[in-house]
Image 1 (spheres, rainbow, N blue to C red):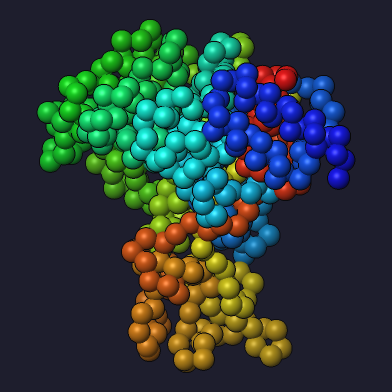
Image 2 (tube, one colour; image 1 turned 90 degrees about the horizontal axis):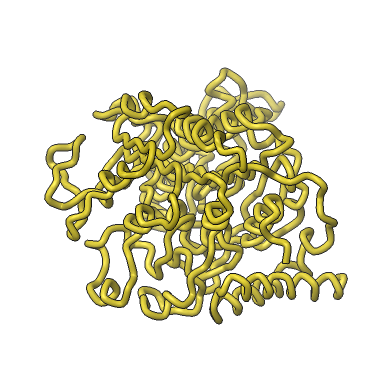
Length: 501
């Protein structure tokens, strides 16, 4: 280890925390992060690249661990009539690859709020915290006000760049919220979710922070979560039996429209009607809660754009700024499919994200745009057994015979019953009694099928292993080795030229 480089790296990260006014908690996290990144990692040892990024796009596949990437790859190939194993996803063509350590400061296996905050701010923090350093206790509003962290999106806005956030989850959900909000409790998505004490102490709900963003605000914001922006007295425009959640009387969608050149869309037709050449601010809220799973989109009452379509529209608006832009795109429902123990939904939403990455790659130039694809954390999803080459990734396992040729009957385990290679360490599909359920006549590729799991849980959990980082464009060479997750922020900031301490 180069001790001089290690000391230099620590100094730079601590200095950045001081310059940002991050508070004691952030200072502790900065010091801890330096102490655990292997002597500063690649960032400490590489010289500054000549190229600078005009634009940065960060794609986050929520819950997209390495085994999930493998599953997405095989499914995407099989959807095109190939065997799938040797298929190449859009981000797998990127020249730079690294691993990210995802733990929170207080959890070995992390949540999305703490991990996304690390990527957005450059400081690791506790689970459940959005844009706040680790010093407060969870829900401790008054202390959190002194430990706010600055996100890469906020830095970009302050420097005159355009900014956007796109997700298939609620726009106020953990990962997208870390770009613009600061709360010590990720569940404070609307004012009705907050305790009166926190409101009295000066904390604001996540939805209102998007609308009240200083300056001219975020240019593009699209996803679900409509209920958090609408008054409780107003019926939802798509579902007559639902209303908004806000009890403060504010209609945040109408407030958005007060901006110059602003548009608001809650269905696919309105989205399609938005002209990116004349629209300066776009708010899209396509569901009261999360957007539909990719497979369920065709049956949606109001219609919803795909993640690729939202990415294209966002880039069309943001790219008009000659100074450049920052954009976060989240494949949020990969995570939700896994939590439900339904790999079919998780992997199909992963394919949808691969299409969004390909779209962004086509619309931008490698000379001036840094694209990073990563995950906030993994899941307990596994691919096991010995299926033959080209076996349906969501199907039952068909193995090979003693001569290495494909079997004509499903493989069975010691209990004489067939199984799938896709499964979970825990989750709703857990086998709780013997004999194990016989899936001989079960369609394991159906949307509502729960892959079998070992430990019963109503919701499958995150996994704690490292996740991959894929990068291309100016500054992408810094994505190599095994990195602390907060270093992703530093890669983006250095590419922009923001981080010159």
